[in-house]
Length: 263
Image 1 (cartoon, rainbow, N blue to C red):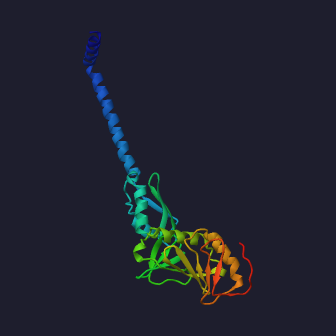
Image 2: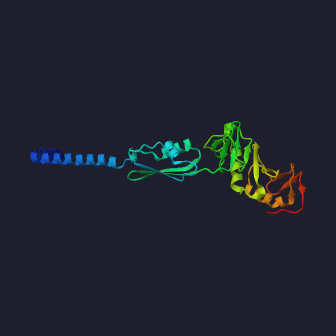
């Protein structure tokens, strides 16, 4: 009963409030609402995209990056999907990697990226695909330069621009090789054969054939071969086999000097 009386009292007090107070209260709410709407409208205009900056582009030009990003100037900066734009750029431009898109308030967008560096060419029936250190094909060409190794034994269906080779064994072997091979003059690689899934075979410019196996301990294997090169007189049938990892087997070669090799 007490609660009911208190409720009635509150209702009565509210209904007995003077009209001018009600009017003042209504006008106050109306003014606050109009101010909020004004700020929202002006803020939207203030935070519209007017500039897009690209950082890190070298072989890619700014125009093609902006075209891939599809950023509309004049659009609200808060409606931008940074992740979505980064994914668009990588999809359209496989050479691009580590793409980030950031808002620089009030009206600027900054796109930062790295570019894949070519370490070799994957040979396919249609031409050649430049490939980076992580076994990612990223650029097609009808002709390959002699500066980088030609990689054979890879089915064209395994080559997807912007993605690692769709064969885990071949991908792992190439990544291991290119991360360890410094391109030194004593071991200039001309071709790489991946026709055997579990044996990476490299051919040097001076006709050495090197069997590396699956790619484990690649740095150690390369050091072992580099130490051995001065004692080998290569011919067209020379083969170096380091598949076991801890020793080098030489076949069909003219050994200048018999000497233990320990890297």
